[in-house]
Length: 98
Image 1: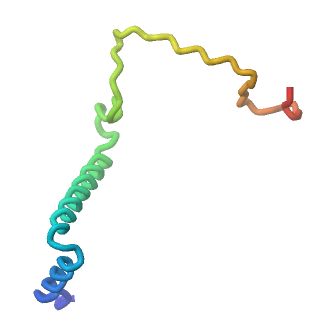
Image 2 (image 1 turned 180 degrees about the vertical axis):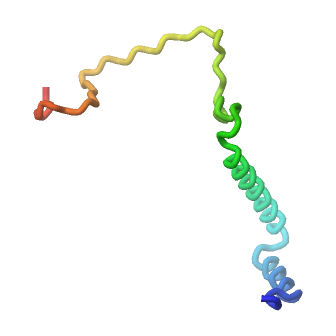
Image 3 (image 1 turned 90 degrees about the vertical axis):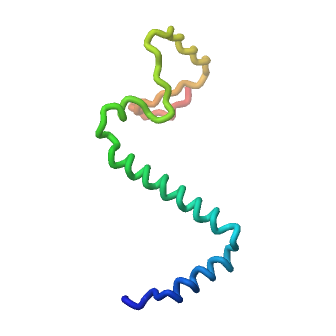
């Protein structure tokens, strides 16, 4: 394992990368890898601290906090439908046609 990467191995790898991707694409690729690593690192940190603080359970990211003094509009009535949705289990052993 000691002689696995010598100086000339690294030079060959760098030349190969430049030949494959070109000079213009290498900085963009390195920048995008850096961004991805930053995002990954912050998500891992957020997962570690998730649920440990009281403030993190109050709101979800992107969720608006409702004003308790604001008037509440009544819910809109559901349109009348000839089809009745009944999710309770059937007990009468019939086909259900009415």
